Amino acid sequence: MPVDGRDDRIGELEREFARELVRDDAELARLEVMLDRLRQLRHRIDQRQLEPDDWALLGALIRETT
Image (tube, rainbow, N blue to C red):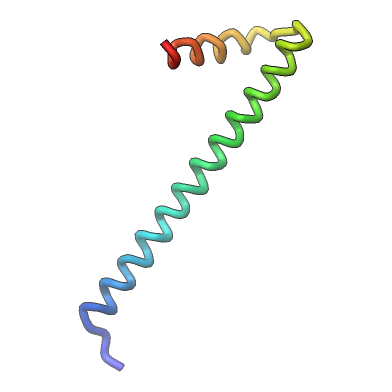
């Protein structure tokens, strides 16, 4: 069966979709890491045991919300 322009376009769309899924997976992984860091931070706040690196994260969060 000959390959026509539609077949090329479908292949291109499939590749673009696959790239978007990879980007989405990477973004999801990044967000999961950040959520875990925030949960750990919350636990240390509750325990009143902040660590030196916590201040940088807290500062960034405050900057983003103001």
